[in-house]
Length: 205
Image (cartoon, rainbow, N blue to C red; front, side, top):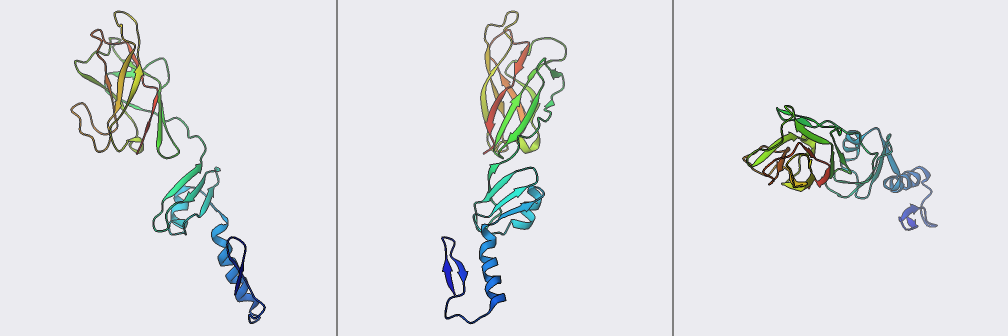
């Protein structure tokens, strides 16, 4: 059977026997991997197309679009997905949400964004001797390894340093100050600070 086009689609050649149904079935099988497949959500994608060929494209009802990047495993690249809603952060005992709403969301599968401010419930400064455990991200937002970034804080009162270090403990990290997913605040100002702004981003992988 002859082939045409960049995809090498099969068509009956001049010397082929007249087997119309078989030729149409072969053409359909060849076209199928190049079609945009439709699913309800990511779970159905993995269930129906986990063993699909490399480069299979699948879209969900919310507009998400994925391309399969492995011929042997259910591994996908996210081409597009709607921005997810903000989710709550679990605060440690004695901590409360400040005047900027807290939130966490995971984007494109591997990027996590945090926002908001954390303060102490009793109104005193966050001023632990070494590091303060402020709260924790959801389990699906725990990075593989330790992540950290500069975080702003209040300059009220005697505080003279406006930036500290915020760490997110990773799944392969051990710490005396918390467990995987905990938010650890490091600050060297002796006066401490009234609140910590946890706004920032980190990678999951």
